Length: 188
Image (cartoon, rainbow, N blue to C red; front, side):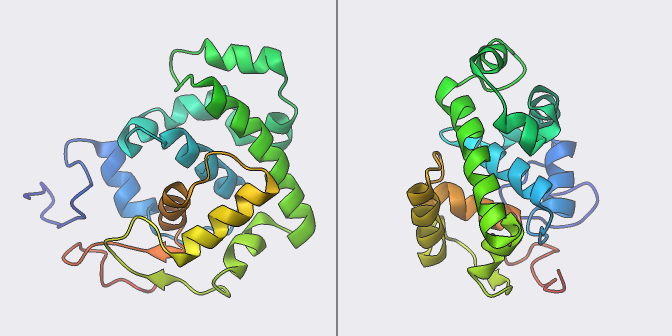
């Protein structure tokens, strides 16, 4: 594929979408240790279920506004009125089950923070802080284990494929394809 800037990127990146290019180049695969960002990405990956990541990414700013910029305490306090408000917002994905899961998952996320000191510590403990370098997968033993644990704790929309995509997005798994200008950059 020909890119205007001459860089070669992963096949999934849409060269006609600046938001997607920026996401690929600056965010995807970069290790995240900030709980606020980890919560946001977990919510967005859950909303992606059955849809494309590009669809969710294009609505990310609207999601941020709709969900109080993913302020965990505010989201955990959402009630039925808030869920209905979100269901009526045409700028986001209005799936009631996913909206409800965001609220209940936020409460589980908060319990994990309390148990481990942060969600980041919980997430990174699975790899002992190491980044996994692998390509061409949609799930793994790691995503299976984390998915199973999160489900046991009560989270929804955290199947192994969603969790694998999440781990890639937040840099626990580094999956830039061979040939991508970022594929050899293991300094992240």
